[in-house]
Length: 204
Ligand code: 5GP
Image (tube, rainbow, N blue to C red; front, side):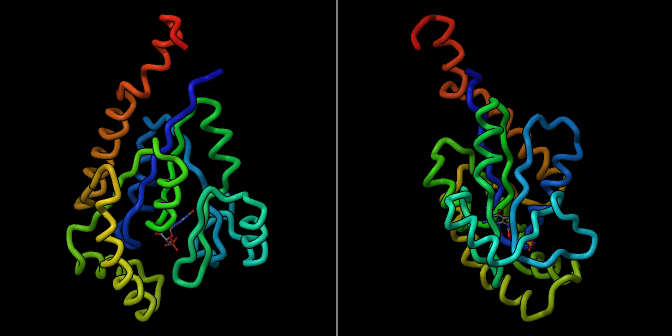
């Protein structure tokens, strides 16, 4: 049986640039992990594609998935559900491939509880004003939504202490480099490498 893959969780306040960093990371082409596409009840933004950016579903469909135990984690965020379908993550990890999640902090804490050997990376804004400017600059949300998100961000930054690594998103390319460095190091952890050697030396 293949060694189970590693689960990498990128999280942090909304607007910090998780989506941008994640896309840049996958665009480098030298990623050998798979992205888990989230499910949401939020309406698609312009340019977003179903099955690429998210699986866009109705509230009823999402709640049905929760009831059937089909979500690894989920959270209600600014009046919408967001969550990670369990099946894809499990099947991919079982094939020995690493899986990458990009999720908000409450969901990340559920993953922490269920998958203690996952790697938790917290993306931080250089400062809160910068975060506000980015949310406004994105031009996709109304001002009251932005203020709601900023308030939430302050609480979210306090949650950094629950993570393994903190990556400042000062420049997207720097953040990508740091995340790649983390993943490379994590793959060298004795606890991840030892199973191969146990087979070799007959200590299974
Ligand atoms: P947005 O509406 O800007 O696409 O996403 C809002 C927030 O939901 C972001 O912080 C994003 O990272 C988070 N998010 C996206 N997918 C998931 C998911 O599957 N689970 C959880 N818990 N959060 C998610």
